[in-house]
Image (cartoon, rainbow, N blue to C red; front, side):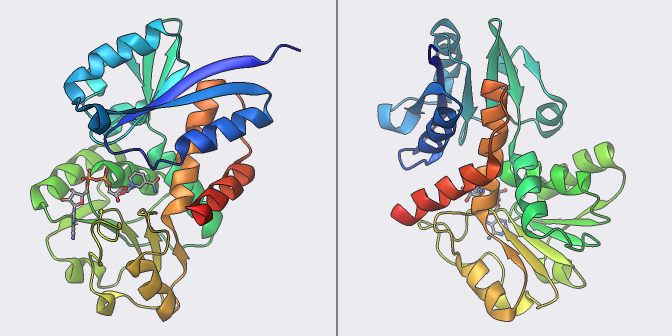
Length: 284
Ligand code: NAD
């Protein structure tokens, strides 16, 4: 049987340490596909998002099955596409582009990837009153997803309050009046059943915590999006208190599972992809 070949890639800046190529290529191998997953790192070549139209045209001409899109291109890519999925349309951001019959179709698997990992790790989590810290790219996708899971109330906090307010308006228009923005994390966390952290704080280059440990309570679950390092200071503080937690790796795997399925039309083995991801992380 001839081996099917597939081209895919990731457009972003500062992505040299991404685990996505290894994850996607390994899962493809299990399905009898030869997938080459190319990193297209704007930082490495001194390019900018202004090059996106040329890169998309090149990908189409070269027969790419699809592309993942990351910082700083998730919003800039939107007007360059032929079609958007309802989620990508609602979020105004795309992390996966599929090339079908020469047309570029934008999707967003960040929200669905977060929801998949969250439900898997904390199936019983109380979604009565959820605080989301960080209303940027990841936060916007997760906000949409947690409302889709049935969160009764969502409180948004961002260091840039107009950003949280704009997201509040967009989400309430789409999901009904369940979202309120707060300028103060302490006020937002009073009475909350869970906390989702979606700011870059805690990454190796931005150490620390975006929220004071004293504001956490053992009855609260904590979901982290940062996965480099995998055990952030927030997760360590939450675990020390006995809070149920989900690390950022679950979302990283969830969004990759969604992208693989969009690129190939095949069902990914999510458990296998997660095991592989954890092995790659441990070997870093
Ligand atoms: P972004 O820059 O689009 O948004 C970050 C938001 O956080 C901004 O609105 C900023 O104002 C806010 N912020 C920063 N510090 C804050 C603080 N101390 N308190 C309150 N708000 C604060 O970034 P992004 O693309 O949303 O990425 C955020 C993090 O999520 C990054 O660490 C990224 O690596 C991670 N991420 C993880 C996954 C995953 O699969 N696990 C996917 C996407 C992004």
